[in-house]
Length: 548
Length: 38
Image 1 (cartoon, rainbow over the protein chains, first blue to last red):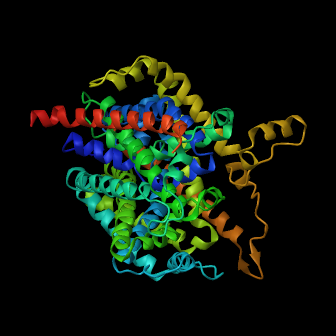
Image 2 (cartoon, chains in turn red, blue):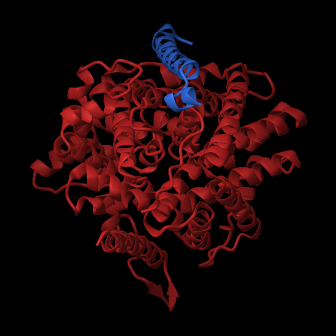
Image 3 (cartoon, chains in turn green, brown):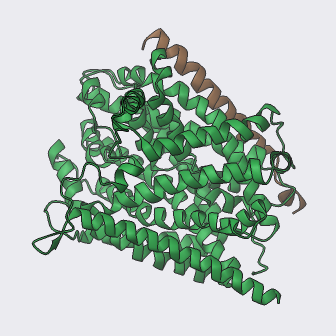
């Protein structure tokens, strides 16, 4: 193992990098969609409860695992999990912490490059005078899904993707202090500044004002109007807990990695809390005050509530057109700010995904930082190529389902159990509170031991066997009547069983079908996981040989 | 906006702003031990 001792340059830099890791595109695009799909105001209360009982405790746990691993010279999760679990096989649980970062970065960098392209097109006035359908068509053309061909070869998108990847690799190769910290210190304040500007503009839109049909506050009201009867609906609780889990970027291994560069006696309790609450500020106050109020102002509440209208793609397919109502100058400025803030949200997250992979290569294979950054870049290039080429056949979404959802929920559950029940809550609590500059109420010790794992188990089961349309009561009723469990096509088991796929053939007239691409993507992901497991095995063999 | 929506939104916004600002100010005011040594 290399004896390099890289450290954070400043505490503010560390907290902004951690907050940047958590703040992603989901804060502005996934959160509004989840809130809308789960009844607006009904969603917020379970969301905040989940943040306090699962989000913040898991942040403390991950920071503690990371700093504890760093003490032993480990900056990636295989080594951290081994010293946490105290057994040799625990390092293989840590494979998730490399796999998730690598495979999520593969599609995330592509998504991030779209935002950069849209900043460019906002500056050059591409969207000026375009109708709603033209803006939507522009996106389809950009990712090349206009025809039914097997391959998508979007030349412009590939160009922006390569540029985005080079920027990521360049920043990562400069190191924590001169790369990640500087990027976070520039990106996060700009993101907040752009977000505040857009949020104020959004909620001050009135009916009849710049083409708006309704007051934007109707959207804000919808988001915050409490519906207490929904508090008993497990679907809403699962969606809220799931959103907290994904927004904080827990279960990935990136928080562990950043925390591993913190000294043994340094505070983690306050730092983790500062980063976590900053993420909530961006998500709830800014993320909740841009997309929904603007959409309601121009399309009305019914359109916003219709399934599929508010989501990830709305940011690209609809927002540029809505900005056109504000006049050429403000439309360009709003476009630059909207896609600029998405870009900063994206890049601060993708940098955090690169660091654990690089740390693994540096710690165990003796690579220097520039070489490990280049290796990460090449791996991303290979995996992303698959996502880009087979985007139209679902490869991109398979990566998101298996890496960006299933793997991280599973790892989050396992690490939570390992920390409280294997490492031991007493040692764990001592690890969290050592050097703490805030007093964490002792109540959280019990929350970490009992409540957080239960929340995570619920999120895991929700991901695994989510019933049709989230109808848990109906699903249990169906099961008791002997009619089986009605699985949703979006659940993990539903995906394994290919529920909802019309054509179950791999080839039609010698041409691969969508199902073939889906299964090939899953095989690619499985092979990636196996390859990382072998790399971990080889790394430990090398270590044992060096010790002998 | 309705009073019931405001009754949820204002406390939620207040709590989030309060803890975000409070914790971040603490971080700004207290440099890490490493920074202090330097």
